[in-house]
Image 1 (cartoon, helix red, strand yellow):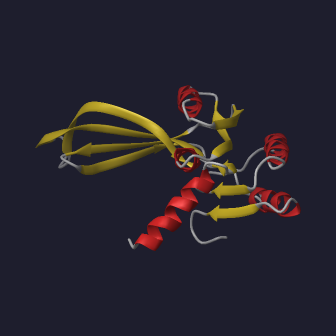
Image 2: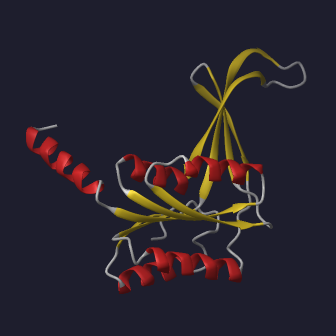
Amino acid sequence: MTPADQTALAAALEKMAAARVLCVGDVMLDRFVYGDVSRISPEAPIPVFSTGEHISMLGGAGNVARGAAGLGAAVHFLSVIGKDEAGAEVSGLLSELSGAEFEVFTDKSRKTSIKTRYIASGQQMMRADDETVAPLAKDLRARLLAAAEAALEQCKVMILADYAKGVLADGVAGDLIKLARTRGVTVIVDPQGFDY
């Protein structure tokens, strides 16, 4: 990195401290289970994984919000969780973010997305997903859009973090972009796949 690049990066990081960012998208709970594999199962030709340490962190759009907050931005985060243990854990992790406000709406009909990765000897052995993939119900969609509209009064940037779980599906992303454009808010879109 050249000295000019370093100066530009330092200036950009200073601006982040004054930024107010709205982040909307699919929040997930990322779980990492570390362990050992020392034998093959006698029942099938698969490794036997002996579990050890478990670590949980924000995933999906939650990780995007965490990254923006880590750079010093004041983050307002919107998403949807299920009425379950994973949803409670997501809320707890969000409350630990410095300089972040969050509104996570609870949908009793959906599971909070959990991605569990099993890792041995530095290698990911397997990933298990437990989630609901579905668009938001009409009333929940209206509540999310109303919360975004209110937050956009204070934010100059909106990040849409789409992990194809349904929070931004069925035109929600387009509605959010329209709300942002009428207020002159910069929009950054991070889609799953290539549908921008």
